[in-house]
Structures are given as C-alpha cells and as structure tokens.
Length: 98
Image 1: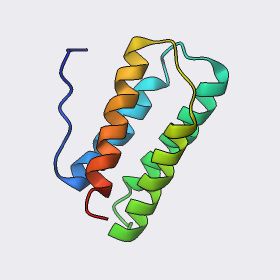
Image 2: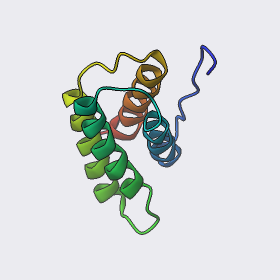
Image 3: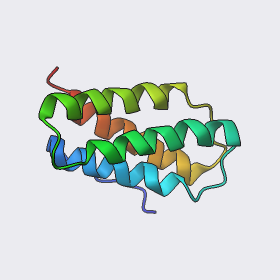
C-alpha cells in the first residue's frame, strides 16, 4: 500500500470504496474479537453497494458500518489499520450532508 489512500468524494463511489477497504481487512492478521466486528461491518458495507437500494437505506447501512467500526478494538496490524481509517473516511463522505 502506498502512503496516500485516495478517498472518493462522491458518495456512491465512497460506498464502493468502503466495502473494498473492509474486504481488504479480511486477510489481515487481526485478533478474533476485532475480526468479528470488521466482518460484520464488511457484510453491511457490501449490502450498501447493492444497486437496488435507495439513498436513505444506503446511508442507514453506512451509519451501521460506522458504528461497528467504532466498536472494533485495535487490530495490531498497520495495513488493516490503514484500511479501517480509509473506511471511516469513506463513511464520512457518504454521511457528510446529513
């Protein structure tokens, strides 16, 4: 991973990036308790990428992801941490105008 992670500024693209960043944490060596939170966040984020969701429902899913990420403990893995930070930024993009 490079030092800079590009965060999309358009909400729909940020939802896709959110799911991608959380998917990337699945292969990282993180503690099982943290991995459970991240796995749940990933599942909800993937659901948020569905084309048949309206904007309100998509935002609700992203709020759920943000809450799950707040509940996750430290990972102990720098790469996972960077993906989580990027995921949090993606949540902020999607929820910015609420």
